[in-house]
Length: 98
Image (cartoon, rainbow, N blue to C red; front, side):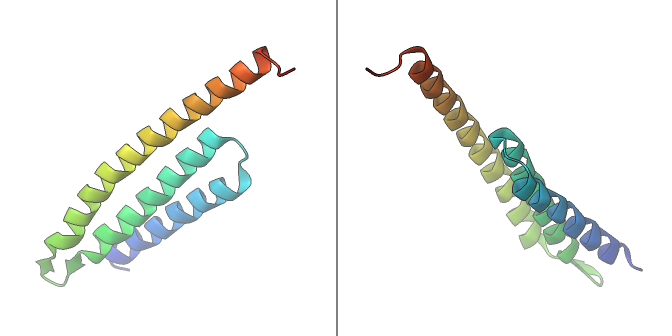
C-alpha cells in the first residue's frame, strides 16, 4: 500500500466518523464539531490527491488552505448563532408571554 492510499483511507474514515456524529448527536454544538471533523476528512482526501508520481499539484493545497479559512469563519458564525439562540431561549423562559 502506498502512503497516498493509506492517507486517503484515513480521510474517508475521519469523514465517516464526522457523518456518524452529525446523524447520532442531538446537541447542536456536538453537531458543529462533527461537521468540522467531516471537513478535516475532506481536507485529508484533497491533500492525498495532490501528489502525483513525481509532481505535487499546488491547487489542492491552496483549496485546503482556503477551506480551512472558510471552516473557521463558518464555525465562528455558527457558534455566534448558537449563543444568540441560547439567549433568546433564556429570555423566553424567564419572561413567559401572557
